[in-house]
Image 1 (cartoon, one colour):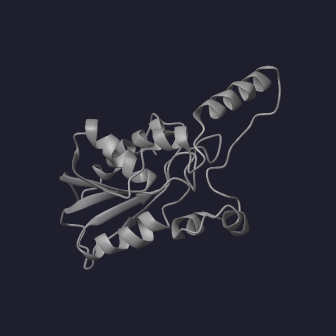
Image 2 (spheres, helix red, strand yellow; image 1 turned 135 degrees about the vertical axis):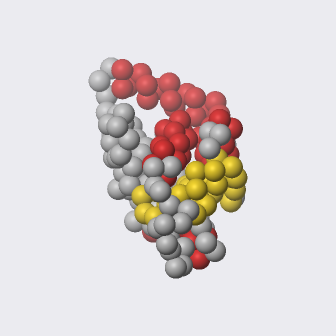
Image 3 (cartoon, one colour; image 1 turned 45 degrees about the vertical axis):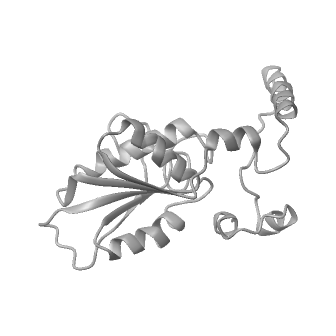
Length: 197
């Protein structure tokens, strides 16, 4: 937890084989896809593989998601997702066994887009990898399919008016709520299944 944040960021650290806390290791900040968590692709696939190669890997849950704090729950806040990367680096550089001059960021899917964005201004990042990176702004504007920008803008205007008049808050789920819902929408990718409860 950073002293100036109102919530904590939960993370798992993967250590390299034969870890020796008296030595320093290059660190990788592993950023999960949107709708995912630290125990899935970013931690248990890439995190484990990189740790086996000698890196210390910090896989974390984004703010508002997984075991990390923040309200409302389960929102995808691009600005906060990028800031989370810097916050995890803030923590990493306090660990005596992390080489602060050898910090990289690996992001998957939405995390890949955030990793690139963070590397634009976060100069403690010395290497960045984006795996199937997603431009989240474009995804928010165009969606997964059936791109209709005018329809989306009209729907947003209508919903904002309803909410301004005291109507119910609308929260749109990024991923289907169940595997059956995913299948009914034609979403068959492994990442969708792994990120769906």
